[in-house]
Image (cartoon, rainbow, N blue to C red):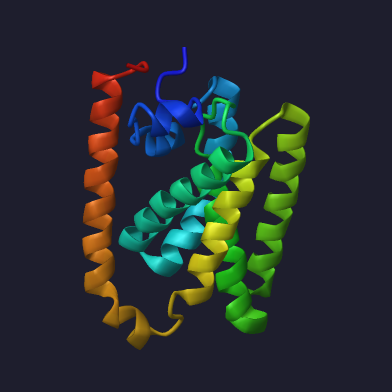
Length: 187
């Protein structure tokens, strides 16, 4: 029923089911939900990954899943949440901030990201989606986009760090998914 969902704050905190802070970003509430998120990922994902590479992309996705869940837990601790949209808003927030920093040559992509954010926020209001999580992901992504170096030299200096962070994110994500399978419901 709520397999993988970040169901409610006491479950995550009192029952120590921390893995739900990540597993929710890999589960969805039906085919329409999954399809909409896949369209956003198809439109936004390649733009971001082409700029920052797969390791940074995975770190960004994981980081914004966490910033989305934290704001969601603070805003509405008793509401079950599933879906990748918090992380997708993280990608959008990242791209808006990052491409803004590139100056006029990046402003077209930045404006495209603002359009996606507006459409998705409105869709979220109509459908009753987790706009608190959307905002948390967008803010986390924007922060990431504001601090990530733009130049090759700055990026190269952080390659080892992001490779390590990507491996850590993959290990934590895999552990979360395995724990979700082992403990699908509260204790």
